[in-house]
Image (cartoon, rainbow, N blue to C red; front, side):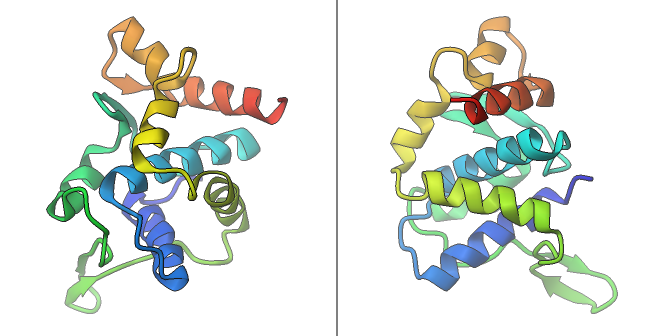
Length: 159
């Protein structure tokens, strides 16, 4: 089962805000989303998000998230992504329900492994030879298949 991409991003942002982090820029948020998605694929075999990562110059990017966060430039993200909640008739920031343990397990793994790494370094890591981004780029495709991501992260579990 995959989740709305904005909701997963907001779940990452929620943790950032609770911890008082000042280093979560749009680029770093995209990479943390990618790593959360990858670990979720490795653990469950299912995608964490309902959109695909695209092959962008600085690594894997979800276009919708890029456009939602680009106002922050290279600075700290200070607010959630919102969407119109028809039931409440207002803009609302949704997060994934805490009872979705597998998603939060993947988020925790990604957070613990990668949150201390700078955005440029995370970007460089996504460009490493054999990474899903590098393979898709070499093949000339614009979206990274989830199979590539899953296979890569399953490989990381065996290291």
